[in-house]
Length: 237
Image (cartoon, rainbow, N blue to C red; front, side, top):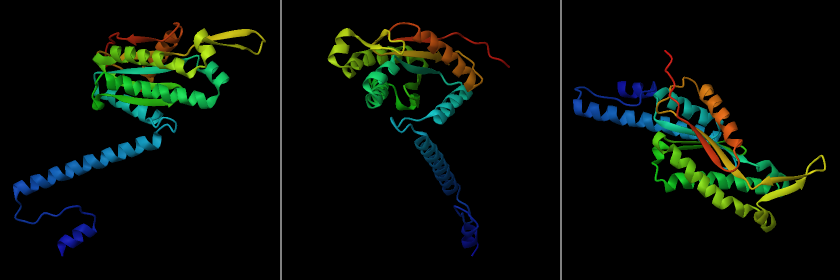
């Protein structure tokens, strides 16, 4: 019959005349929901394939995709890049296994900070660029609070990864390749953020360059800190 032939050719539904408007409308809604579900499933699958193996957080491809979408949609969000200070010195003394624990701790700090601020899941994103670098996306009006909360929780917990001697001294002292004594402070976290609410970035790379410059300036400041760029850019036609 025609119905069988239709399904054999790839049809997903079949409507028999006379057509009922209410049934037609219901079926269209069902197929739209199904399409959305399949698209979301595909997105989550791609994100899982892109996930960082250590933290399970979305990786570079997902980060780029989310930020590009936010720029295109002109969403009122804040994009924050985070980086740990003196992480290499810690890794050199305590080993990569302990370094991995610090990275997982940092990921948990970011998650807990967003949770404690009661920010809706639909308005946040956490990505793991690699190593000790993360990206956080939050509502534009929460970017300042997010940075403050991350710093508070990170500074409270990071000292627990050091042995008692280093914790009391609040630094790691070692001999460098020039046989000179060198001391590195307890790890801190530097963050750079851009508020997209009143900014008009056209490309991901443009935003990335701005964040890289801000992060460099943040890392030049001793201790945990954050710099937020709230300058309003003139939209280019």
